[in-house]
Amino acid sequence: MSDERDVSAWVDGWLAGEQAALDPEYPRLMTLLNRRRAGQSWHKHGTFRDHLTTVYRMLKTWGQDRDTCLCGLFHSVYSNEYVDLALFDPREGRDVLAGEVGGGTEQLIHRFCTIPRTAMVLDMLARDRIPAEGIELRRGDEVFRLTQREVAVFTVVTVADLVEQWYSWQEDTMSSYPHTGRLDAAPLWSVTLWPGPFRPGSSGLALASRLARHLPALGIPVPPVFERCTRTLDARDESAAAALYWQVASLNVPLVDPAHTRNLLEAAIAHNPWVGEPYLQLAQVFLMQGNYEAAAERARQGLRLLSDWGVQWDKRVTWEGWIVWGRMLVQRAQDRTWPGVLRDFNNLGLVRPDAPVLQSVAA
View (tube, rainbow, N blue to C red):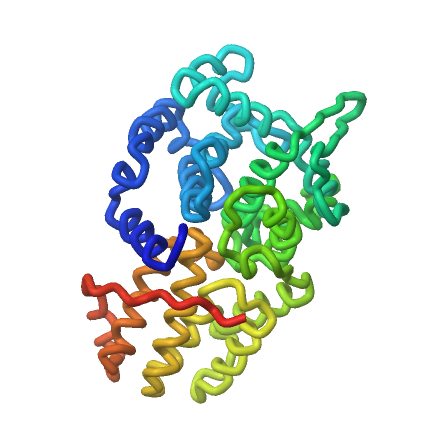
């Protein structure tokens, strides 16, 4: 998206269910996915359709072209090395998908489904730059030569794919990704109990930032995350931020004096300033204290990050839920009012059409 107004309009359109106005192809492609049972297949923290449409939304939010967005929307429909989700038979179903999205786009989707993706991630992590001639990957005796354009598309789709699905259950079952081994499940049975605590992940964003650092040099629109992909998140900082945030989210803090909660959230933001939910939690603390200016600033920062990502980090609540809650916080801060009686929190709901202005997060 070119500016803050574009981002806000895109978010409004999605919240209003006006995807057809944002992309005229969307209803037809949703019908295709529904016929292929995408909404009746499971994926990590919801349905496979949820996952595909959120990856698509992220890519659209990031201003990617049609081929890239549709690669995201159909990115695992022939299955891949990670999942068994063949909505289309890779031998007999390719013509069906090609007839819907176009031959060139289908070839890109099929290519992404069939390359050794872990090998690609490891290769990207090891490199400082992507050569103009592209990269070469191997799986056994099989060689895959990716053009620089393919590397660009597959990298931005991988970043969206990773961030959309990463939370505690995924992190434990894919422990140490991309260096995941084959651990016996029996002694670790407890981590397989889905959905687990739904804690935000402690390692996915650091990995995503190291992949995204290549994007500014690859000739595609640069996502507005990690300061336009010019910064990386240290793995230790991500772990610390997630732990601090989860202490607050699970109410594992002193509950009388809000200073403890404020300190933990501010520390979480200092370690990881790239996700919106800690800002929104902090805005609530400031609202309760009557510090409306600080509340508005933090709520706007959180909203901007959630809008830029197009996905939530704390997956206990939907992205849409976090967005409208953030707008509620800004609205209340602007009105200089916040419930003083517990029962009145249940009355919160209406967000007026004068949507709050987004604000970029300071470096």
